[in-house]
Length: 367
Ligand code: DAH
Image (cartoon, rainbow, N blue to C red; front, side, top):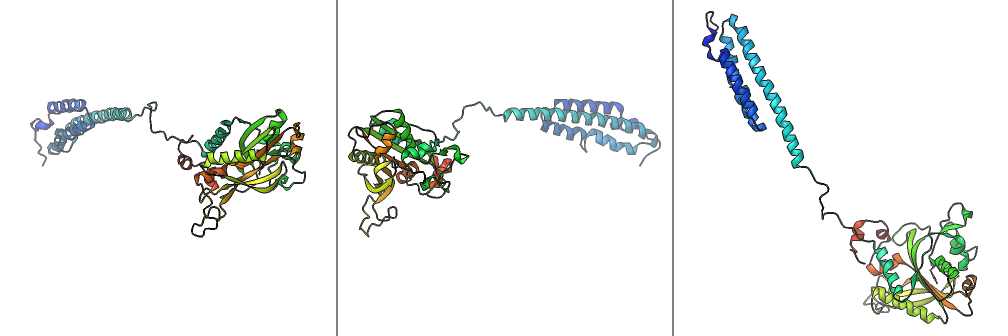
């Protein structure tokens, strides 16, 4: 109850000196708080409900009305000063903390790391190089030609008639316009012509590279694929040399005992021509006439088609300025994707094409 003759000086907590002393203590404690936790403690002690200034504030009501205003102003100013100091220190400490967090959690992006996922070379590339190596070891050299090729080299010079269906837009990508005379090469055989036009026998070359046909991508076809072409022109070259070379290549690629066989076929640039089969890499011929050991891969044929080959057509030799009376030659060509499917058991062409690193990595860094 307010008492009219109450002497404010008697309310110790409201004495100006007491308030001043409390403010000084509070400001000291606030300045001394080195962490946000310590500041929280200081806030509780000097601005909390049970702090001296809060208690003093409560005393105001007990003063005589005349004394309340001055006391109220004194306590209010004191509380304001403490609150401002708390806010300022809070801001300071938060800024310090943020700076520390930034420093502690900073990442040195220049540090060396062993966590980079290591890719692997595409198995098509390594297989292509392996085939190259087999032939380089026999003294061949590697020849290359452009992927955008003159239709004349891709077809005409290879003795392909002007009305041959393979020239159609449905099989061949023509470079616009159709009378540009340029195609995306449909085979690596034009490289044979380029070599023979530039070089006199003896010729021993292998030509790996990209080829293109208007096929839809599915489990066994892709519009962009790879072939490897072989060409030998020398004196006295016979089909026996061709057979021996292909058998050697088969053994080197697929392991000892792998053989090839010829089936009669027609290619305009070879005469005679053959399709070349390889012993089934799964059953190795054991499924033939043997119901106990059926083979899904070769349908119990024992053989799988691998490529085309033949003796270079004398007309092609002559067209390239090579004397067919003196020289003869053989040539062959096969798909590298197909060879990879045989060699590594890849069941779906799309896995080879899609470039998923999980597929490539499965072949490791095989060189
Ligand atoms: N160029 C043929 C093709 O793409 C493959 C081929 C057959 C190449 C016979 C040859 C060969 O060198 O003699 O189907």
